[in-house]
Length: 145
Image 1 (cartoon, helix red, strand yellow):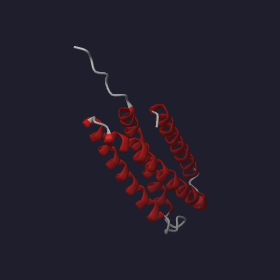
Image 2: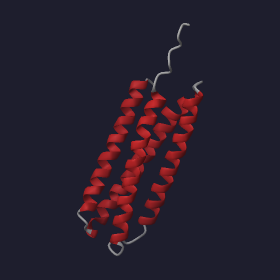
Image 3: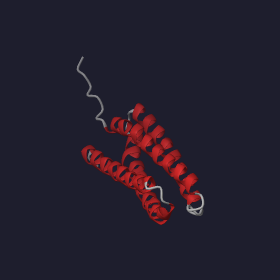
Image 4: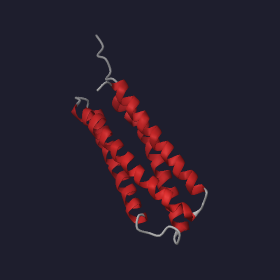
């Protein structure tokens, strides 16, 4: 796949994730436990989005970098895979915990946990973006010396 197309798809996924997190944050900011059903729907939509995003990164970006003959890119791809896996585990643990808890009874704890995972996801994407760009950068051209 062309690098420009990969950049575009990556940017689209990031935009979708940010929009989704902004929507969840707005619902959380209303600070109404009655919105727990809306938040549950958003949580499961986000699970699907992150699963698709993770598959795209692994299949289209990381795998390509691992096969290139540029050791720095392969190392960076492995580092990013680990970071994505850790973020995925953290998000799934959050989803599993809060899918079975009555949020109206534990609203304050849930509210704090939801804001914390959103903040962590934002941080992950902020760190990841420039590193993905490095993976997608063209290799330096050999010089004639």
